Amino acid sequence: EAARADDQQQSLPVPAPSPPAAAPPPPTPPPSGADRPGKIERLKGDANADGKFDMVIAEGFFTAEENIRPHIDAAVTCPATGERGSLVGPFGKAGKCKVAFPDGGTSAAVGAGLVLHTKP
Image 1 (cartoon, rainbow, N blue to C red):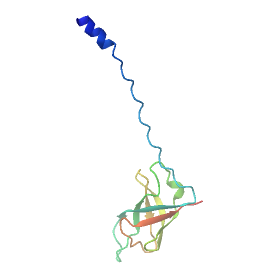
Image 2 (cartoon, helix red, strand yellow):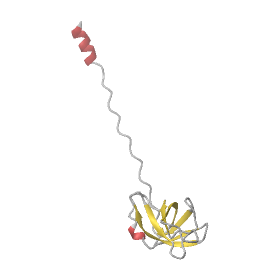
Image 3 (cartoon, rainbow, N blue to C red):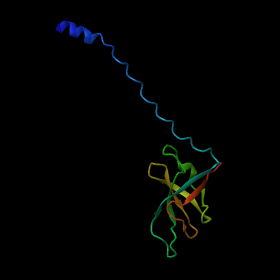
Image 4 (cartoon, one colour):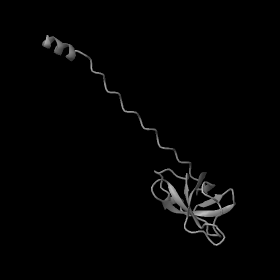
């Protein structure tokens, strides 16, 4: 009987392993020369005497895989306040970047929208 039980177990079909799930493709970056929306992730440094900040950390302009360096010095505007700044460089490795507002800083708060005007 033990031999017959072994034969029955060996004759059971083994399910085929399912193929691994395909990873979703990375987000497609906007074409060069297109405006890119983003937002203020945090305010950097101390506030000026008037409460404005000269530097902010922005997110949303780039994916983590994109090279930010070709966009250094690109214009950045804050539609809510009309203030203009420029992209200074990358911040970390998650697609965030530093934006400077040299003409008196920005009064925009964390979460405020920004627009990066990429170079064509």
